[in-house]
Amino acid sequence: SRGLGEAPATMEDIMDVWSQSYDSSTGVTDLYGDLATGKGLVYRRGLDPWPIEAETLAPAAGQIIVGGLDEQLEPRGRVTRLGRPATEYHGFLEEELQGGLCRNEVTQVVSPPYLLFSHVHDARNAAHYYIREIVSLDEGIVADSDLSPP
Image (cartoon, rainbow, N blue to C red):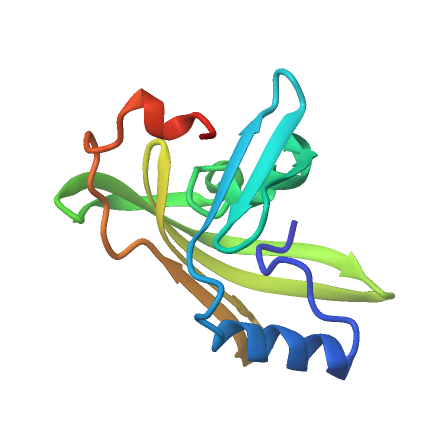
């Protein structure tokens, strides 16, 4: 709800995430999910596919599909990003967390259904931030058969 995702709880969690971000040996992981049936599948190179609840996969889709956070922000204007017309949104999100008030500044660029760019930082500590950006978007090259598990 603050726009920063789930924070690691321990130093070990931080180290695990950091090391995983540098490990390219796993290759591509394909995720398939259908919220209507609740069924999902994960395909990772070198491993047998395994079932998973589709709801568990939904946050991954939320990384690139507009999830409604933009509705809590003010539109700043029309922009063009990746050759697509888009709207830039800006605002602040506040939340009570562990007895204190957290306030994050958020900027998003949305070209429905895609969240093309998101920058979130703690309004009191600019060192706590993340940037998520789609750097390439080629629509129309994925066939319906690409959206079904093998």
